[in-house]
Amino acid sequence: KEAEVKYSYEDCQATADWLLSQTAVRPLVGIVCGSGLGGLADALKDQVAFNYRDIPNFPQSTVHGHAGRLVFGTLKGRPCVCMQGRFHLYEGYPIQKITMPMRIFKLLGVETVILTNAAGGLNQDYKVGDIMIIKDHLNMPGFAGNNPLAGPNEERFGVRFPCMSDAYDRELQQLALDVGSELGFSDFLREGVYCVLGGPSFETIAECRMLHKLGADAVGMSTVHEVIVARHCGMRVFALSLITNKAVMDYDSEEKANHEEVLQTGKQRAEQLERLVSTIITRLEHN
Ligand code: 6GU
Image 1 (cartoon, rainbow, N blue to C red):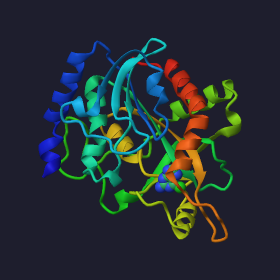
Image 2 (image 1 turned 120 degrees about the vertical axis):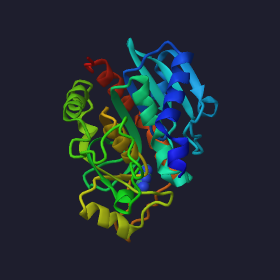
Image 3 (image 1 turned 60 degrees about the vertical axis):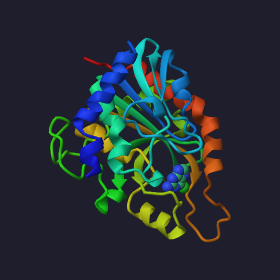
């Protein structure tokens, strides 16, 4: 019921119209910053920023390391809008609320969405600090019926049964590889499959082993829901995971996943990740 009442097309339209009346920026690129990766927003020029709590109908962020601001501005002349802080299933929001900003992006005129996150590495070749270009995902909450598109379909956004085999734009993945190589990042740039779980507890050892066997290279608690909603309404998607820790895969390991380690690694590699993303943005072609 809540999905129909609070996150309707008209509600999204009202929020987008309000934002467009407050800023002259007309963004073609929408960015979502993961845990500890909010520095990208600070790189925007001629900023107009809104605290989430000041935006009509907008959800609020509750996690440490997520600022909770929507920042409009330009990156080397390209108009962008950036979410500094995102919403997660584990915060207890309805899944439609977590993904509502994607629909607002769409109504603002955004054509390309770039998402970043912090993730645990399941692939044994991955090292802490690697940046993984997401080429595909495993939507585990979706298997249990927790999909952001569940409920009545809003045809003005997209079709009832959207395709997901082309969710992650192949051209943008290639562009990222090219840009990464130019910047000298090839040694820590990877391509892989991201698996989303509901969180907030980290995985058990048995769960990590299972996810690895199922084909996941990294595991986290975000991004996939946003990707599904962004694809549903026809935006192009590119996503990156920063591998902030290695998922614990055996019982002899002394390692334990913790949020502080996630934020610490974010700090160390964040600058390079931001350079990668901003360079990709300057190479995007929009019609
Ligand atoms: Cl190890 N697991 C999950 N679910 N999310 C993470 C993570 C691990 N590391 C960073 N984010």
